[in-house]
Length: 332
Ligand code: LMR
Image 1 (cartoon, rainbow, N blue to C red):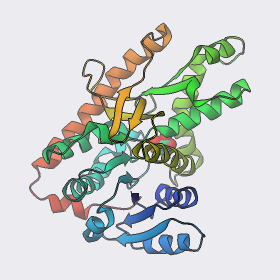
Image 2 (image 1 turned 90 degrees about the horizontal axis):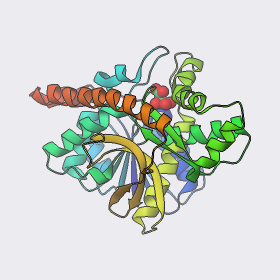
Image 3 (image 1 turned 120 degrees about the vertical axis):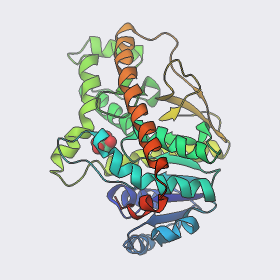
């Protein structure tokens, strides 16, 4: 299995590379960044005994060698928020970074699974889908916005507030990945526990939605979540590897292009993962009224976020000088 991390010299990229080198066996890890300090990251990792082989590549001209024959490509490259900023405000800077990366994938590694971590996920996944479609190689089953961070946060918060052990089967995350579109949905066991405690479902939803802002604020202008984000990327990619290897019962939440345009063309939801990508969305048929009313509000916001990504794609693809996008690529 070959896994490439794009933006590997950045905070999330480095932590993801570390976790992967500690948690995988017999994997080839390809670390790419436009910044040549990525070679130091690779050397640093090489001093940790591991069966994972690490190769490093820097500079945009080497991205093709970095990603060639990858099974999975994890994109963490991008700039991060400052306190008070909304994830949507990252769209133009991060779209310029993402555009040439997705083009390189389309041209060199069109069958790879793409795991996008860069924000704003709600808009960049639709933008990436448009770029891949331009090359006629878009496979909705293989493009994921990684929203596993919300899953980790929901589990930690529930365990802390309700003082119980929570299984991943007890809840899932729907909607998208922004302050007002993250929607955790819990099962009856958790709802009953909430009813008998002073911790209400609405409080839980807003606690999960506010985690990203809180980390950005507490990092005092020096970035956003890296450690939990890398842990989330590891969890998602590990599940994907198991599914690719043929394990049948793998479920993870992610933000994907749905085939059901009536709900939303893009949505975060629990997905059944298979060798060839996700094959079904596993949302309860009977959605609680209080969840349903939140979901309706979220779908309207999501629709704006999706349009934003598609508009930015249109603007960028009008530009005849694609190398202009390339020169703007910066590391995380
Ligand atoms: C998060 O939720 O921590 C990430 O989306 C990063 C951010 O900007 O909040």
